[in-house]
Amino acid sequence: MGKLVVSLDNVVIKEFQITKDRTTLGRRPYNDIVIDNLAVSGEHAVLLAVGNELFIEDLNSTNGTYINGKAIKKQLLAHNDTVEIGKYRIKYLTEEVPDYEKTMVLSPGAAGSHAAPATPRYAPPPSVAMLPASIKVLNGGAAGREVLLTKVVTTVGKPGMQVASIAKRPTGYVLSHVEGAGRPSVNGDELVQDVISLKNGDIIELAGTQMQFIQG
Figure 1 (spheres, rainbow, N blue to C red):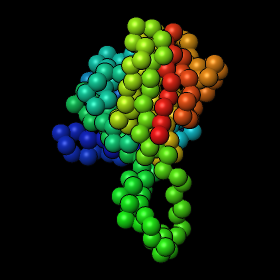
Figure 2: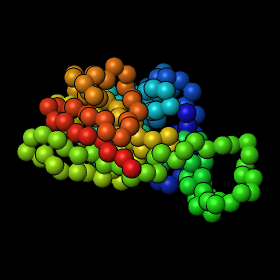
Figure 3: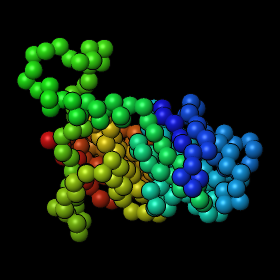
Figure 4: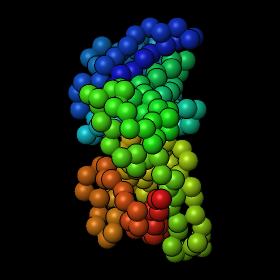
């Protein structure tokens, strides 16, 4: 699942391995991750594991929860994201992403080679996530607009109403529900789980806006 590295003033003070579906963070001693500082609320945030994905949700804390400098309510964490709570920095590190990045570096040199793979114990899946991807707005005032998915996590929707995120993973792109009572739909089916894999041509409907996922 990965781990969290907590630091203060660039000095690592603790590491925490994510092993549970629900991990709480706060100043109170009953939290899974305890940060004893007045800038941290008693029950500050919670980490929610859904499959291989990890979400962080702010629990209406006094000083808020930030990811890479941006205030969030609930967000899917990506490898190397930095959660900021007061003066504390919490870096999220996964175990699978470095291997994937290594595969990306090595695969061009191996192209066309008939030699045995350097690491025969690991046969990487097709590099679907390496193909360029975008979302194209199909209706409304922004119809025809196309947004390239160049970031690890791209947030779409209308804050306060309905928000989802599209994340790039080693096996491809996934859509996640982030905020709002109503959930997004894919090809007319409402999202029942928190995360769903996307394939080329999928139609996403979110806050009354239809978007097509395009890859390749």
